[in-house]
Image 1 (cartoon, rainbow, N blue to C red):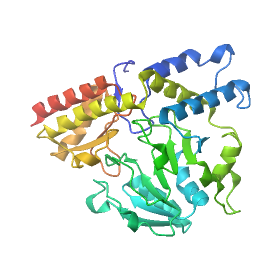
Image 2: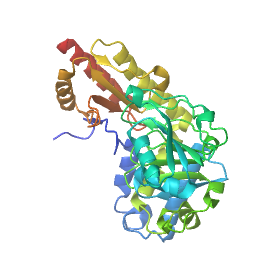
Image 3: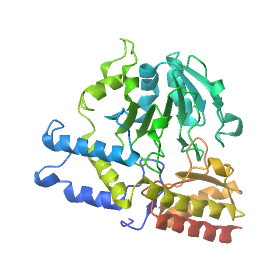
Image 4: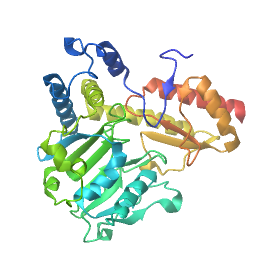
Amino acid sequence: MKEIGEIYNFCAGPAVMPVPVMENVQKELRNHGGSGMSVMEISHRSEAFKGILADAKSRLKALLNVPDDYAVLFLQGGASLQFPMVPMNLGKGAYVITGRWAQKAYEAAALQKKGVAIDGSADKDFGYIPRIDPASIPKDADYLHICDNNTLYGTRYFEPPETGGVPLVSDMSSCILSRPCDVRKYGLIYAGAQKNIGPAGLCVVIIRKDLLERPVDESVPLMLRYRTYYEFDSMYNTPPTFSVYVAGLVFAWLQDLGGLAVMEEINKEKAKLLYSAIADSALYINNVPPRDRSIMNVPFRLRNRALEPKFLEEAEKEGLMNLKGHWSIGGIRASIYNAMPMEGVKKLVNFMQKFERENL
C-alpha cells in the first residue's frame, strides 16, 4: 500500500486536488464552521449553505472577472448534460469538431436537428486546431460551439475564434481557471468540475444574461432550462452541496496563490518541462503543433509502441499513476492540471529519461 505523498496522480479526471484544499476538507469534514455537522449533512436551504454558495460564486466571479451582465450557475449532470441543454436553450448551433467531446456535443444538437458541423480536425486524427473563418458560420446559426481544450488529443485554442458577432459557446471542462480568460468573448462557458474546480458532480455555467431571454420550447423540462437555475439561484432542487463547498475552497486556494495570471505561469513552466523532455528524446513523440499544444493534457507515444505497457507498469511502481492514454486511442497521457505540483512533473521527466536510457 502506498502512503500519502508517495504518488503523483496524472488522471484526466476525476483529477488531482490541491493538498491545502484536501487538508481543509479533512479538518472540517465532521464539523463545518463549528456547527457540529458536516457540509454533507446541512440543509441546502440553511443560512450556512447559502453562505457557502454565495462565497463560491463570488470567488469564481472575481477570479475570472465575470462582468455584471453575466450569470454564474451551479448545475449537475457534468459537461455531458450541457451537450443537449445548449441547443435546447440557445437554438441552432454551428460546431467545430476537434475531438471526442466536441463530437458528442454536436451529436446531441444534431439529434434535436439543431446542429451543423462547419469545421474540424478529424483529417489529422484531431492533432491540431483549425482556424475558423467567420464567413463559414451559417447565417442562421444562433451560436458557435467549441471545445476549448481537448483532453484526449492534447490540443487547445490559443485564442478564441472570431465569430462575426455570433455568440461563442465553449466547453472549458479541462482548462477553466488554468489561465486568465476574457469572459466577454463568450456567450456561454460551461465546465465539469472534476479537473480544475473540484469533485465530480458539479458543472459551472457562465452565461450572458441576454441569452437567458431566448425563447425555449414548452417541451423543454424546467430542470433543463438555464432560466430556472438563474431564477432560483442554482437551487431549484438540491444542488451538489459538497462539490460546491470544495469548489469554493479551490477558488480560495487560487486567489491565495495570486490568481489566474500566476497559475498560468506555473502551468506554462510545467508544460514546458514535459514537452522539452519529449522533444529532446529519441523514444517519445508528440505531433501536436506547438501553437496548439495543451498545457493541461500532454499525450505522447513511444516510438516503439511495444514498450508502452512496460513504461506504464514501471511508472506506476515509481508512484506515477494514471498515465495510460484514453482507451480509444491508447498511448501515454499526463494530465497536469492546476493542482499537479512541479515536483510531480519533474519526477515524471526523470523517470522518462531513466526509462529511455534503459530501453534504447
